[in-house]
Length: 505
Image 1: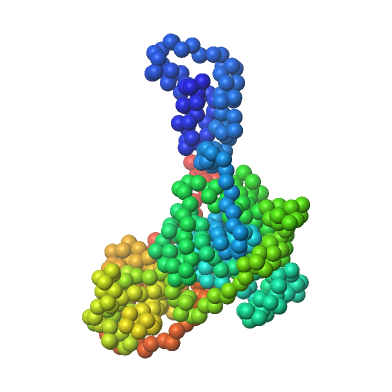
Image 2: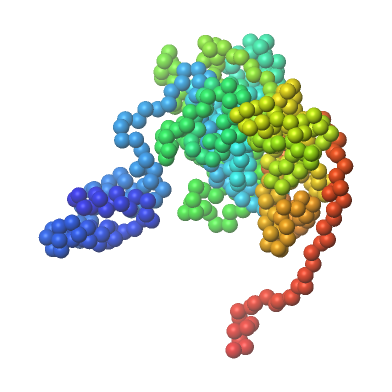
């Protein structure tokens, strides 16, 4: 029995096998530890019954994912997360949504859903859909979305207004005028946010965004999903209550996927449906996990729980301006030289940088460098914080006129890779700018259409940062550089037909 338990423990992270593999490994282990034939093996039937008893509840011969999840459960008693007031603890996480959506140019794929769930009320404070590859800026802007009331969108029923719920709308309206046309979802200002160790949430951009809003970050233990059990369970509820009713539902894995599943909804359309479902269904639906000590026999909805708690804890609005949104963008530290600022072989320059050139910022911790914020979905401009006045300077890219449409960082990297594969200089800004424009143009019909689709689909939701006044760009001799289009001879090949070609043999 000890040998069986040891073998089962060793195959925790392996692909699922059969009991026959376990028997062979147990025989080898016993021979290694005690000598060949010293420990007699029971019959095959008896051995299989023994393995069944030892492996009960471990999914040793079932789903590999369930087996790993079962092994990560705490050994001691499970203690659920608890909070007594809205915003005391908010859990945030990202997962692929089990629905196929159509990006622009007909590219389909599963989007990623990032949500923030309030533990005290089970309110979905904010939800963001993005194409695969959620960035730290998406999680940062999710924080800003939590602090803004959800507007009652055109086409929504008046029954979904905040004034139609038990939430004391009139009293809150006296404090925050933004709630006048708000939908039935409360605004919750987080105090502490629980995160896992995903690179999006442990990034400097997200941590800095939380710090700027005065939010504490509480990391969970590695590989311990029970530390964020509420948000994990919310994802499961979204799949069963929303996703399975949407055209293009794929199921949680390929075994559950139907035949001929196709994407029907655009990403923006699915996002509108999701936001309406959160207000109409999730926020109004009673949850078994929400109980009042004064009414223990009655389950409450998230809106009911918020109405009960806000009367005791109060509400303090936290309005955001355009400058606050800039604080949430990713930051890098650069020196301001005669040519301007250089980021990933892109040069940004304008007249307003003149007092900062070759001057230290005064931030000793960063070696006198200047703080530069950028939008990963639109690299055509950056924002520099003037450490002397605290104001922001909008600095355009010197080769912006060579690219006809906004482009993201992954578009820039793809263009540099294409130039490198052609043997050209991938650090030449003008060449890369021309390659970016050609890539986005060719992507309309060519094999790289996914790059253009991801760029345009992610750009519109992410561009919630109000544009600051544009600074005039300096005349740059490099602006006149043109890159000749590379041409090559194409040798046509016919389509291989196995039946036709086989008949010639």
